[in-house]
Image 1: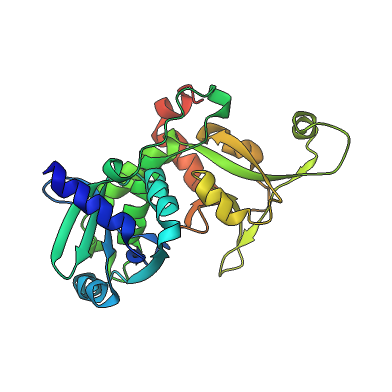
Image 2 (image 1 turned 30 degrees about the horizontal axis):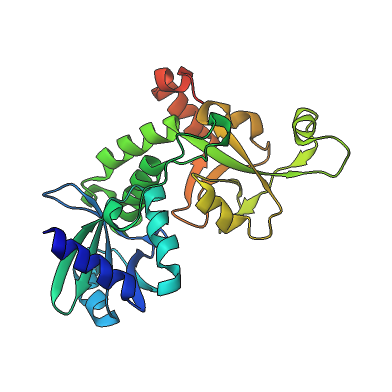
Length: 273
């Protein structure tokens, strides 16, 4: 078995390119929970016809998939990113069949435990994972009563939303003060996005990878914030927040924040670092 795994790892490392199944609803890798092992999987294909054959089953279920091609030079960044979204297994599909590989066998999991708490990056793999599963199901264009797993997914997502620490983008205004003083004196701007209905929403992020998609010009700084503090930076005229606008883009209206706080008071009042 070990020899087989080493051979598979070598073959993956030598590939010129690979095609990853992405969900069109989330703009993220399509995640699958294996019904037997309960591993959270991402599927990777050698060519487009293999992906198209795989996608047929999901097209019938009204889940739209697309293939995103990665060149070898971008493999490491992609595989490392999967830790941010809670994936633990890779499924490689070739003309010869399927092969399974634990993510940790291919790429070492980052360990930030030795860093001081204030320097450890904000990560929310369980929130990312439950958010992806939820949006994959919720976005299907079918009646809600046919989305049989939606209720359980919503419960998991709600808990993880309350338990999370978030990244809020903030633009510091020019001036002699340091960032701490500017925050105290409210010398900053908070960005606003508009959805298709022209509603104002504040961008919010689960991790540095999602924040980087938004902060391409390095205009904003990242401010870490637990759920129970989000209201302090809520813009008056905004409808609420949009979590990971470049990913699963989950809208979090202010009413939802209030509802979650009442629904899970023990979690909200727990010490969040």
